Structure formats: structure tokens, C-alpha cells
Length: 228
Length: 228
DNA sequence: GCTCTAACTTGAACATGTTCAAATTACTCG
DNA sequence: CGAGTAATTTGAACATGTTCAAGTTAGAGC
Image 1 (cartoon, each protein chain N blue to C red):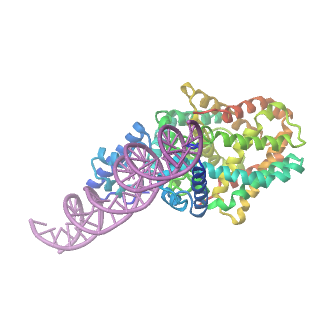
Image 2 (image 1 turned 90 degrees about the horizontal axis):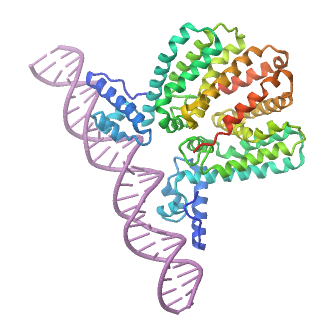
Image 3 (image 1 turned 60 degrees about the vertical axis):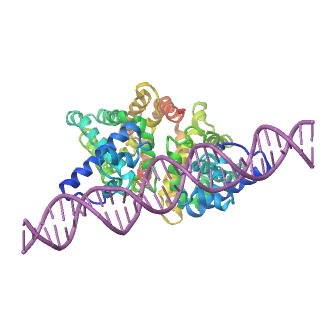
């Protein structure tokens, strides 16, 4: 993602200063209102230097995402270490996403759309963002695996990727949520996580068994498409 | 959406020329590669004139959308007039969307992302795009109402808006679809429309009846949020 | 310490979306 | 037809993401 990893002490310092300035400014003013010139100025480097370490403004956003992901991991780790109930693990993990992102709610919209652009190298469905996406998927793998729920193999296979997609959908809803305390998002999270866990439990029921293979195949083909 | 509707013959001519040039160029070169200067040049007006009729480049995209929607309506009207089976009506309507948009597949990505931006006035969830969205929702209302399916009132109420959201999801999938003839998208359409109609049929089954009110409430709260 | 190469830095230059005040044109009303 | 007003047109100017060729600096090898 970076044009070049720094090779000198000065280079390391510059890169860190640019990234730090960008993260601060995105949070303070949002994506569009933050200009590359402002970032360079606050980092005390020239405009051109920023482009030496980050090919584009969008690539700085990717680092912003990575930052929030790390906050999310920290926030949820203790619960994942002690709780075994899948419903609780899932609900709390998704709740932690929106709680972690709350300070960035005002700027999340423009950032999200930048990333949603299918032709952007940052699109999470393929490209430069893949390593980060894989980390998020791994988290959901841990959410499921670390629980005491018995999930059939065919479902377990595609569940983490599906939950990642589900998280994205929740975030998109959250962006539009203007309710006090973001209560509506929390309600939707509680309802949907409950629904998901119930559906997993129903997977072997006669009514659903008939469609199970078809539905799994469908989800796999939707979620597993590897573009670019 | 337009700053001003034309009041003179010359004005009408200019606006039409700008819009026509924009539609052609978006199709030829895509959204980013089409500059406002190129549009103005092909329309034989000055750069400033374009901004007299369209507040921004994004607003020209909205017209592009309207254009494809009208093509879609034309394409699907005959079938909706004669066919009564809901599954067929729905499948063919959604199929017609991607078939209609096929000439724009290469450029659809950048256009879609522009519109997906929650802070854009063009975001379909609220703002300038609302009139067009209402038209699309009305089409799905017609798809359901014109069928011989008996849909419970509580479901019928939120079904058209939900189908509109479903159409958006299919389009997002289609953007990434690189399979020959866009076959994967067509398969996903067939599977999902079938699933939707089956679920409607199952709505009164005991297993689902327990969750039905909750699920409907959930969908309404997700899809009915009125932002901005 | 000197030299040399790779790394790094710089700021001017470019393209493009957008704004705006001034100039021009179209239309209405007497 | 002749103002006068509203509509339209214009292009220069601005902000910003990005590129790049040229200059400067850091660190390795001797």
C-alpha cells in the first residue's frame, strides 16, 4: 500500500508524522475537509513527501481503518476470552464495532463511501484492503470457534466471511442513524444477532433443510466472489 | 436538483445539450474520465453554463440513473401487463434491471460509489434522489400488486421498499461480476427471487410465525429510516 | 573521514470540480 | 419597436489531488 517502506530513521519519522497528522485531521474535520496540504503542514513535511509514503489520500484512509480495527480488537478481547455463548459473543462484538467507531461517526460517511467505490484499490472486496479484511474475517472466525455452539461444517466454512459482510451492513446502517445514543443501531444489532443465532439453531429443521444447501451455495457465491 | 429550469428556448436547448453530452460521455468513458470541460465542449456551451443547469457533476449522474430507470420501465412493461405469477414477475423485473444496465457495466462502479456516499445529496436513502427512488419503489409495488399472490397486509406494506433495497444489493453484486454474460448475477437473481417468493409463502408456517412480527419490525426499521 | 548510491525532500506544475461577477441575450410590456 | 428585466452565458480564478524532475541528505563501504 505504501510506495516505499522507510529505510532511514528520518524516513520512519516522516512516515509516522504524516500518518499521525492524517488520523488526527480525519477525526477532527472529516475526510473531504482534510487536504493533503494540511496533512503535510501538520506533519511538518512537504506536500510531495506525503506521496512518497502513501500513494494517495485514500491509502491514508486504509490506515485509518486499520487503526479502528485495532481499537476494536482491544475492546472485545477480554469478553472473547471468557464468554462461551455464541449469541453473546456475536452481539458484543458487533456492539463493540459501533461503540469503537462512535468518535468517528460524523466523518464515517465520506470515509465509507470512498471505500465502497468498487474501482478504488481500497475496496474491501478486493485489492489493497485484502490483508485488513482477512484480519476482520479472522476475528469472526474466532468469535464462532471460541464459542460452545456446534455449527455444521458446511455452515462454519462460510460463516466468518458472512459475518464480516454483516458487520459492513450494520456499519452502513449506523452511518445513517441519528437517534440519540445510536440506540436504533443497537436495537438492530440485538435483533439481528439474535436472529442469526436462532437461524443457525434451526438449520437442521425439516422446513429449512430442504433449502439449506441452496442457501449456503447462494451465500458462498455472493460472498466468495473474488474480484479484480 | 437543477439550479433552474430553463425559461427560454435557448435555455432548454442548452440544458438538453449538456445532459445529452453527459449521458453519452459517461457511457463512452465512465464517470471519472468525463470532465465537466469535455461535457461543456461537446454540448457547445461554456463550462459555467453547465453549472447553471446542474449544481454539480453528481447531479448529472442522477439524470443518468433516471435515464436507465426509464429504459427499465419500457423493457419490463409488456411482461407486467400479461404475467400474473409473482415469482416470474419479480425474476424478470430484476433480470431486466441488469440487462438494461449492461451497456454501462464498465462505468457503473464509479457511478454507484458516487451515489452510495451517504453525504452526497444523491444518496438514494434521502435527499435529491428521493423522487427517483419513489418511482422505483412504485414499480415494485406494481410488481407485487399486479400479481395473483396473496400477501398479508403487514408484509405488503414494507415489501416494495424492501425489494428496492434488494435491487440495489443485486446491482452491487453485478458490478463485481466478471463472469461471461454476467451469468453469475443471473443465477443469483434466480436463486434469490425464488427464495423470496418461497419465504412469502412460508410466512404463516408455525416455525416462522413466532418470529414474523419481529422480522417485519426489523426490516421496517432498517428500510424505513428517513435520514437527513 | 570520504565518497557514492539510494533514500528522501521539495515545490512548481498540471488537471479538474466549482464559484462568481460581469457581460450578453431573450423575452415582456407598453 | 424600444426599453427594461430576467435569464443565460462566459471565462477567469480558486482549491485540491496528484505528478515529477531536480535538489538534498543519510548511511554503507572503504
